[in-house]
Length: 386
Image 1 (tube, rainbow, N blue to C red):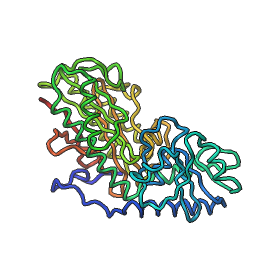
Image 2 (cartoon, rainbow, N blue to C red):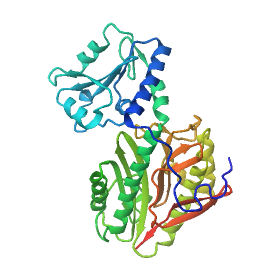
Image 3 (cartoon, rainbow, N blue to C red):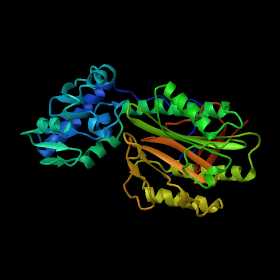
Image 4 (cartoon, rainbow, N blue to C red):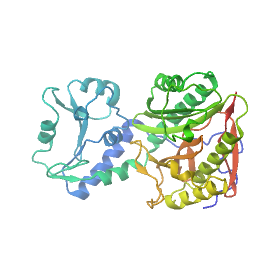
């Protein structure tokens, strides 16, 4: 699909007005209605949710903080009319006070010394139940639930935009304030601090100094000092949603090789983003990206790092590969990533009826690279020179 000129850059420079947003209780009620219809189709009495991404989806944001064992995680049980939180007595009060107060859930509680498994069996005893994991005598509905949770609601999209702002700010503020000779570990700690300070859990942070990412395309952080430049990538989670972005900074003018790599990475992600429409075919989009790799002089670089994935309630909902044929859908969240030499270009977008909308938008003062593509104009983050 061709992109109208300036589709991605409003002429006024002002963001588009947000869509009307439901409140959280209404969002949960709407999801319960979807479950009710699913149960009717399956001719089941109830649905047991055990996967954390499905629990987060049904509650519109529950995050099981401080629970180390998967066997102690909270679960959800729903029938056509009612919904229950299934939780350990250690966690239930906090979850109701801080996570799901006023959302219409009742409580099924087990003592920490009993274990969860028998409580789950008792919950579905004598009922025809569905579940998102294989359980004896239960109908497996993992794929149906994935389809439901991938299509983000207006409430979730609004939450995504707020999460994206926090991640972008954490990366950009760190790039502006980090000091030469600081270690990658120190800089990763600064990003994590900024995320935690605003209520976002840092899930993965990468800091690659002075070309280390030419060898390790997803390399975390080390004790190596930063002298000339570094690339920062962060994935954060808030209210059960995940988003990822990257930014890069140089001390003084960038090396010619790094600038060329950054320019190529920006063009490649621009190609991906411009084609991110409902009914887009991933393998075709990746094929177009490979042509940009080739034109830019980096023909084989696409083999060294995944190009992104569908994200949402799980960090990776669907990987994107040259064989991916499942069509994009409205409401999906997607993280695109291009890795070229030492450079990385990565951001998270929502697929809307008006085209891709950035979740991890650049701040107003961040350097921008404007790229003409498919008859339109798209901006990508450029290198911050200090």
